[in-house]
Image (cartoon, rainbow, N blue to C red; front, side, top):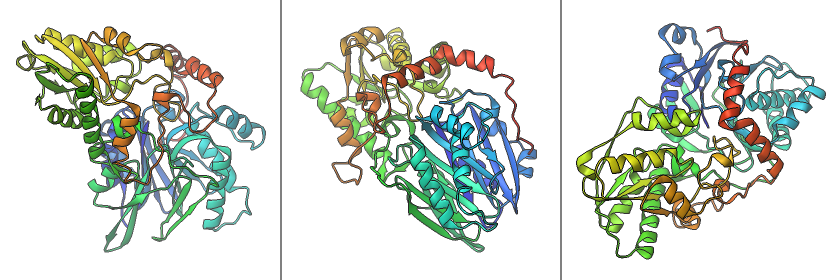
Length: 505
């Protein structure tokens, strides 16, 4: 899971890129990077850490130019070395910089092809570097000309779609030319673009979420379509073309459950409204299955579950209150590497307000239950605060299968719902009752009563149906071996001395 941004402006873009990364910080807290283009010269700064730690005044001064890319990273492939912070750079052809959100499911095959056939060297374990080199190589497959033509770019993206499988939303910059953005044929990962009029002319922006456009005063034009590529030239021209032969819009439904900010719009769906409908659907399920409930109060697990919890409480006609105070200086525990780190951080992150729990039957509402670490700790905290009974409700169905398209759920064995029924999960987290959302209800909630053009979602984490059709048991076994918590710890040690070749801003 990562956040990407690209801007083609009429004036310096360094501050705008930085501001966009701050807005997208929830999508990745491990590393941040910005590259700008001044005439044909690139300026890069990237490092591990939050955006406001990575970029100091001296770095911002050096990030000159009217065009640039930005990236915030949470590593779902490779390791967390600063050498794998993005954007990535390759010098041929033209000099290309790329930032990527998602995962390639055929990365191993592509690495072999790049070495054996394309004669390209990959320096890191990141599949984003693979995607960059595939795109760069395909640009060299057509008649080489000093002046780059739009058709050559579209042809290169078409070949990228033919060779690459998985989920990817990418933005690339070509010095002296402009910015290119493209999205995989299923539209799994989100990406939008917008524009604004200035005295110097029109400026364009690409971002993972629409809220980044809003913050900077850009007008949202639309989502980049599945399989589509758009070109934003430094002369202010816009080109677009669907470059994949077969496209089926299948955005990741977990974006609406958890990842995206509630004030974002993804594929013409308001995330906030989708979460409201999730709460209503879940409340109706509780009323059907437990009409004579004894719930005294509904309490959300801040922040992402608030919207659903409030709608649920209204539907049940039960009092809603805030029962946990969140330490905003602790990052999202879901994407923290290692079970122990996640476990320790829950209590540092949340503090119960005892008076809201004391002698009450409490229904805790969360967006989802993934590893169960947070849920178990929170149930225990509620009991310690004096709750008589603690019930738990998830706005999403049980997460039983790994995510392979850019979310850190790589190992089924680390998922609490894998191989367990709901009663077993309820016992594990220590709740008196547990309610999950039905998958059909979740889909209907996000589809806003069939009023959206999106007819299908990637719901693989709930039902194990991988829409790219290339995810086998062998692939999942290999993913587990490479990406479980223990394996990641070893990788960090092995790659601690990985060289970062381009970081001179």
